[in-house]
Amino acid sequence: MYPTLRPTSQLDRQAALRTDADALAALWRAPDTRCLLLVGGKPVIVSDAARTSSAIRWVSVPDASGMLFDLGLTVPDPQHLAALFLGLEDGTRSAQFALALPPVDAAHSHPLLTPAVDLRSLATQGVLSPGDVSLLGLAKSLADWHGSYGHCAKCGTATASTEGGWRRDCPSCQSASYPRTDPCVIMLISDGDRCIVTREPRFPENMYSLPAGYIEPGEDIEHAVIRETHEELGIRVHDVTYKRSQPWPFPHSLMIGCFATTIETTLKRDPAEIDDARWVTRDELLAMVNNQHPEGIWVPGLHAIANSLIRDWLAATS
Amino acid sequence: MYPTLRPTSQLDRQAALRTDADALAALWRAPDTRCLLLVGGKPVIVSDAARTSSAIRWVSVPDASGMLFDLGLTVPDPQHLAALFLGLEDGTRSAQFALALPPVDAAHSHPLLTPAVDLRSLATQGVLSPGDVSLLGLAKSLADWHGSYGHCAKCGTATASTEGGWRRDCPSCQSASYPRTDPCVIMLISDGDRCIVTREPRFPENMYSLPAGYIEPGEDIEHAVIRETHEELGIRVHDVTYKRSQPWPFPHSLMIGCFATTIETTLKRDPAEIDDARWVTRDELLAMVNNQHPEGIWVPGLHAIANSLIRDWLAATS
Image: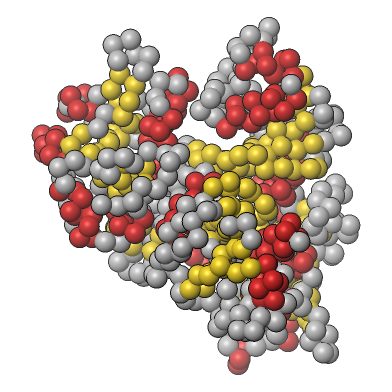
């Protein structure tokens, strides 16, 4: 029915369908259409008995509607699509929607809604496929946007979701608003033999990552790397090189990963942003990646771009 | 007083000062502090007699305050900093602020406010230094954000500027909001010998540029290039490579420029997005850059990342 698009993903977003209300309504009624559920922002999953492997719990539209009715929640109106249109699954070409539910208390719980598990924990544990993580990240970004941006920033009036959840319209000043994505830089800074790892106050105990920060208005990627590194660590970097990027749905960032070089090895960290910053050798970093560092310090897992950048650097210097 | 930071720019943003109200107030009173003015979003400039060279018209705080008083406009309160703190000029270490004024009608005009000229026109004409364009782009991005995002997106209450104009706070739900930057991809797509130029309906007559589009939630840079190219031109690309980036303050984008390759040479353009799309040879593109194409078609000038990407490609294939 619709051509397959992205070989690197499970999802073909079919953006043109978002503005076609009839097509969206037809997809909503199609028997093979499936919904994923977010409850208070947490995705509902199914797991194997040993809980070593999990997946999105897909629910049919009739089952989802019945569950919402049982709970006394509003059934999504296919014309106004309170449901979020994600796209078509590659291969099957079945439509995929996300339904974002408020937190449901235990008394109103429903078998289709358990377990709902924090996405960051799921990603950290590595129990979901990369495709499921990616799809849940998209759904969570969109749902969080609706949850936090429900009013017109221009005039303050409550806005309404349209275009399958990809746009909100103001009934008063007619402004349209679109999902927000904040570009951030994250950088692996090397002096040739060593690189810098940093700890932010909010990190789990003993975890270190790479320095990062938001790109500001009027900056390009390279300038943001230079400025952020100077602000957080008091050093100048050069030879900024783009390596890879990754969406990060906590809540809605695009992480842009770069390498950079410095000859200034004395770090003057900003104590408001950074608890600790240190130079680590290749061997130390490898031990951190493998959870074998003698001090018990470690780095984020495969779900995080910091891990990929660290592996890029270890591979390049091995 | 503060260390110099960015050799590639005229501005050291000194982000840490934004949260230091006393330091900002002291800078506001400092005799060497200067303001640039935006009137209805247009920067006020000075030009030489032949109008071939222009620059930001810098105004002292006393002169700016006097002008505002003459016009009956509110004088910025240094404690609440209705003025936008840009940073410190490299070299002199003088503070630079921007004052965003509403459109001023002719009857209330003032010598310090003329001429106010559209920034895009100034950039297109190439009459400003790159440093001035960059600074005005930052000022315009920040000012537009205050103009369009004056209400809390979460609860709708009118918000107040703080941190030197880098944050707005909601007095009702206490949400903080920060300037928005939308990441976009722009791509030079080649089949080896030729590349694709496209025309959007909003472009000036006979101008072609490179295809571009917003990065969506849940996408990385490379996926966005693949999806956008498929949506707009109906072809698949591979070997997506980051080349360079540029802030684009119309109104608040970060343009991320990539090269990509395709073997699919039959274009199926989306008529809603693209008026025309064509393959051009190296020689045709060079003629377009130099305004010597026999059909009179041309590409954006040096101010635009499309021009830089085109020159990158011409240099790489020459």
